[in-house]
Structure formats: structure tokens, C-alpha cells
Length: 569
Image 1: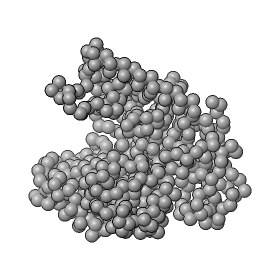
Image 2: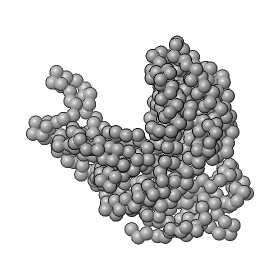
Image 3: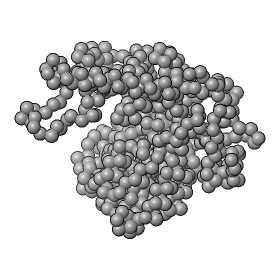
Image 4: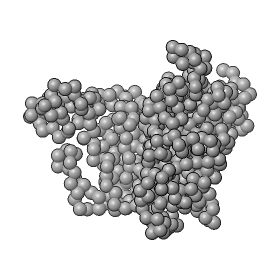
């Protein structure tokens, strides 16, 4: 296997690890993928792993280690998972038969008798899944919180006497639950401190609601200040804010693309991006997750063949990606995406909902993380709901772009203005991150989040769990696979005062159920160690330690020197 000099970064080679003889899958170049640096004359890839070098024009784009892991599902686990879903499906049809003959009571929505000859409104597979599978584990979601969702939180206890169809509150409060589920990356979801004090002061002056759109009488001076601050924070010419993060994507993409345009979308993009692309009326083509070969192939075909039937050139080609993918924990290969975008003269729409504030030495997102020029991204989108502890979203870029959206975006023209205390929370937290409050609290929180993320991910791998995503991503998916273990893991963790989010179909592929941990700068080392101890205990109880390549613990191990030991099946 040959390698051109351009493949090597300044401090070593770039290699991709393909574990267990894996084949390419939806998670990028390969299902189990690593980009690692190697010392000269020494390879750190496992001897049994196939080594695949990246294309020569990609390796030099990275100035720092970029390590992502998507270990293949063990064959036995995959078979048992399919068997589990098969058994549940069989019993589901049996229960539907009993419900049809009124032997078992049906609690879910059904068509009325007068509509019995209509095309069924509710009877589809997802409704079948909801009736017979989701209801078994429904107690793991929509848990009512009665405190600030900080590093710890209080939950209202509830019980069900009809197998999760309805719930009753017991009157008991479960206190001091370690929160590993909220997107509170920098710990600004708090009810004390400068952010809370400023929000309370603004509430007394402006009130809570604005009762108008920005174009009418709902444009406050605080809105103007916030947008200028966002543009300064991102290093772009202008920015505008919206009251809802989901609508920021779904209502602005249709304003940017339309008939005769082509949208190239990552297959794991968020539902808001998918909806926005569909509403635009553009042709949509999907490329494999974080796979630059797949993206470049679509770009070439778009340039060569043009629009369907007419073969006229596309009016516009828009590449849509996310900074951090919230279900995979992976980080977009932004240097490569920008290189392709420039080569083929396409536009780039970057959704930084999870990465803004959570990545980069200055907390300014994935662009800051890779040390790139913000001007290379045509449309920068992000939300205030996560790192800033507020609500809403923003679009940022060139001044001409923002002025166009102010008059053409449905979300800007028809939506009510953002609430003043929410705006103040954004301003105060953003100034804190930038250091404009005269302190180093923001910088320390960004650094603490990065340390907590690396430590938590490293320890989970050492314990033996299969973890997805990038080493620097605060979104940490831990694979559960089997349907019965989704509910069991969430319940067992809560019994031990750890609050987690478990995720299954349709948010993930049906056999890739997982627990998703969100790390925060507010988590102390003791909290993380306590959580890791409980996760390991529950992992042993439910037999969740699936990984065949467990990292050997070593306090003195360098950052990139991962040494694996084989784990017998």
C-alpha cells in the first residue's frame, strides 16, 4: 500500500482502523473508524486490523488528531437483537388480535365506527411499534423534573398500574439525581449567578412576552444587542436570532433553496434539517454519514449531469451538515467538506446546534475546533438551547444573507419575538464565554467540558462498553442494542440516582438502541466517577460490556497511543 507525502500531517501519518474485518457501513468510511497519528517506523493499529490510508488530498487538512470510533456490532448480539424484536412483534400481533375481538382493552387512538370503511389513519408500523413495544418502556421518557436541570436534578416519582398507558404521581421527589441527559454543556442552566440575576432584572423591566413580531413592534434593543454579539462571537459580518431552534432550520432552508436547486444532505442530519429540505421543494440527495467519497461522488454527478430530464445546470447546490451529530457523537469532517465545497463551487449550511459552545479552545464551535476561517462557511446555524442554557436559534454569515432572510424567512416574518429574559440569558452567557464579563469563568468552563469529555469516554472504553463518536464530542452514545435492555438500563440507573436518556427506534436504526450521555462542565470528577461506577455495575447486571477491544488503563499513556487487548467472544 502506497502513501503520498501529502497524506502525512506535520507530526505523523493518518490511518483509519477497520476492526474485525469490517465492511463499509452507514457511519462513514467504515463502521469502526479511527483516524490516528502514528510514530515514525511504528504502527499503533491492532495487528489483526486492516489499515486503510486516507486519500492524499485529505490528510494534510487536519492539524490535530481526529479520532472517531464506530465498533461493529458483535454477531451474536445482532442475532439476539433481531430475535428479541421478532418475538416482540409476534406477541404484538397476538395482542392486536385480542384487542380486535375485545378480549384485551385497547388504550390507543383508533378510528371511529363511522370511519371503518375509510383508509386507516393510524394503522401503520410506527403505530404498531408504539402500541406493542414503546409502551413497555414508556416510563423511561417524559419524566417530570422539579428543579433546575443542572449537574444534579430532582425528579417527581410516578407509577403506572396499567403497563405505562397512564401514570400517577406518588407525591415523592427523587432528589439529587446526577443528570447525564440534559444538553447543559457549559453549565449555564442554573438559577443562581450572573445569568439568572440579569434575566430577572430584564424581566422586571421588559416583562416576559413581547406580543409581536420583530418586523412590527417586537424589535427590542436587547434583540439588536444580542445579534451583534452573536456575529462578533462567531467572527462573521451579521447574525439574526429566532425563537425556536427547530424552526431556525425548517423555516430558513426553504428561503435559501427552491425549485431547480440541489440539496446534498448527510444521512444522519437532524429532523429539522430534513424537514426544511423537503419544504424547500429542492431535489434532495443523501450522502453516507461523514463520508467524503460519497459526497464528492454526488457533487461530480451533479456538475456533470445537471438537473433531471433537462440536464440544465443546477441553480444552486447546498451541502447541509451538522457540527456534532446528536445520536452518533461524531464531528463533521469540516476541513474536507470545505475543500470539496470550494472545488465544486457549492454552498455550505452548517448546523452547530450541539457544537457551538461545546467545541473549540474558545467555545466557538466546530470552526474554532479545526482552526478554520468562519467566512468559508456560507450559512452558520446554531441554537441557544444547549451551551447557553436558553432557547431559540440563530443564522449567521454575510450581511447580504441576513438582510435577505429578514424579509424572506417565514420564521422571521411571522414568528413572535424572543422573550426578553431569554435574550438576556444568551447575552450574559455569551459574554461570559468570550471573557467580556471581566472573568475567566467562561474559558474555564470550556476547558472543563473538554477534560470531562475525554475522561468520561476513555473510562467507558476501559470498562468495556461500545462507545460511538469522536473523542472530543460531549455527546456520548453507549450501545445497548437489545430492546429489553433499553428500559432495563434506564430504570436501573434511576434506582441508583443517575438520570440518563435511552434512545431507540425510530430515533435510531431498529437494532442500534443506545444510551446517550451528555457531559457538562458542571459535572465534578466525583460525579463522573460515581456515574461510571454505577454504569459499570448496571453493565455487569445487564451484560452490556460488548466491546472486543478494551483499552488497557494506563495513567501514563500518551494522548493517541491506544493499546488494545482482545476480548473473547
